[in-house]
Image (cartoon, rainbow, N blue to C red; front, side):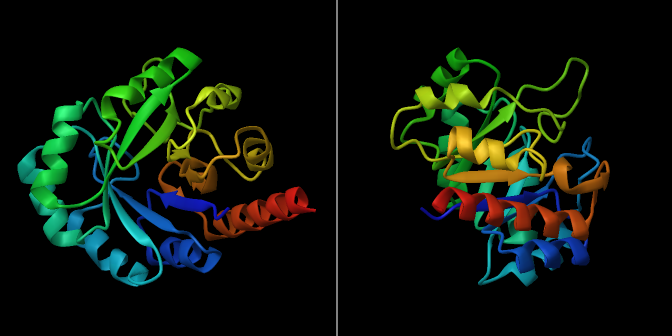
Length: 219
């Protein structure tokens, strides 16, 4: 099974190049002003051009207005939109209809019961992203560098397409792949030298570790 790998929160040419060289299937650009990974739509559009034909560009937003989404879509021309706030199924449907783009619905989880939240979005969201619930006091819905108990994903219905996120790094991705066997993974803070600062060397190391873990499983 092919493994989708999304490097999220890209802001520089070097980091974007490292993600693409490593074989990322998706590159993510964050449009949430409170995030240290925030990038202006025009700059994201420039970075996104390098991914054309190589990886899907994902615009990550948090309860964004139509006006802001219009600006993002016009500047970036993303392949997908990721809604990482409190968007309802109705809002997801509105966004899909407005832009004609597939939508990733991010959901914060910490226990098996949280997976019930996917049901209202079934048939509406094209892909789910499961992230850890933010630590108390955090203003960021994602990118907090914390993980959740991957064992709970064993209770997912077969056929749910998702990406695993939250606290992933080269040090734990082997365990994550072994325990959850996700169809896709998403990493942001785990390849940073400081909040919002992607490290090309850490990105390269992450891809090497993923390949090694998959080779070991295949063997």
